[in-house]
Amino acid sequence: MGLREMNLSRESFRKSTLTKILAVAFLVVNFAGLIVASLKPAGSGSIALIEDLRQIKSSDNTMVVTMPKSNPYDPWGGLVARFYLDQRLEIETLESVTDLQKMNSDSVDFLIVRHGHLEKPGFKKLILSEGFIEKSQSVPEWTVPFLKIYGGFHEENVLVLLGRD
Image 1 (tube, one colour):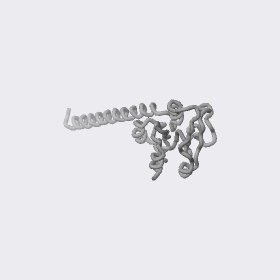
Image 2: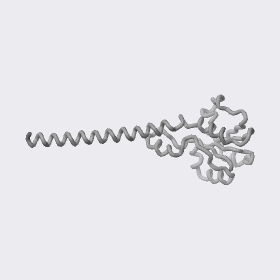
Image 3: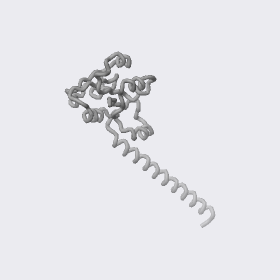
């Protein structure tokens, strides 16, 4: 075997090794992403949040206030998911943050907002001053960083269930 054939052999060996390493890395990363995505509730996770609300609600007559586009029972704005609707809940959807400030918040047991609402200046402070704390969210917190890497996931649409202690 000549020098030239040995050089080609080494180069092809390097290329095939690099290809194998990249293929394995590709498979590992995508398999991990598949596992994370399969453990996340479908869509925005509104049905998972409904289940959490059912498990932690305090009484038969529970007042739930939702911010715009945050109602897990009406995720599409007009097409109510009646199958999941609990008749013992009183649900009110507000138009804006100012409506929350105007209403008697002592009668509110739970507040459902989108994660994007919590990022608005002053909103989180208002919620904390009213005595609300995070009870649950529609997508597990540990999955969010992974889902952001893969794209198609918008953290601001994650629903957050807030309640009182």
